[in-house]
Length: 320
Figure: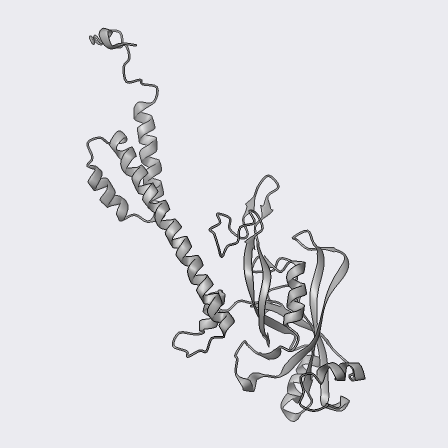
């Protein structure tokens, strides 16, 4: 999920705005029945989760968010529906550059709600700046590493968000590309994109799969897009698990081979058994330690060499 912010409430709607709103209403609404406000859904800068939407993603999200409903705290109950987006636009801030190097851009939306006793307190809180932060929920088809460009849903990547890499010490972040769906936007307390006001947040766990499944023990109904997303996530995790198993087996083979040279009196079966009980970090440390011991034992000593003076050894016939 991504967050955004309400920017301001609007004056009485124009006839053009009422016409746009009428696409979602069952009857024409009068100006005095409608309350309008605008909000920034997200931008193309790197946020607190070290993720960002490139400009192309903002353009696609602009299409997907038209008609999407506003709720509270991402709780998808019908009684929580309170507003709806009727118009969106991607805008730029002149002279400003995003961390990705693109010209800074943000996705602005216009929403409406009906003026009724139920919404009176909410309208007052919006006007007073109390209800300001909102969070948007959406799905993307690709999450790409800013350092190596790998699609993290298809292949493993050694880079970690927030860490600096390369001679320029560029900080790694994730690019959220190819949006496939926009679910909703919610009134929340804490935004993730500092400049968006209504910015982005992630639920506990942080993944689209966990968001779709909900809380433990909670019954949920998944959409086709959510099912496809879960299947893609499972396929990605299976691929990563297979790569991890292959890497672990290779480390184990290296450790057993090195032990035969560094500690010839130790049983290879015992080394293999010990390696099976190690974590990946422990196995890596064991491999490195055995390699150092092997190098120390054989450093600068050929298999056939002349005996040291005074040693009494005579390898003359075998010297090279």
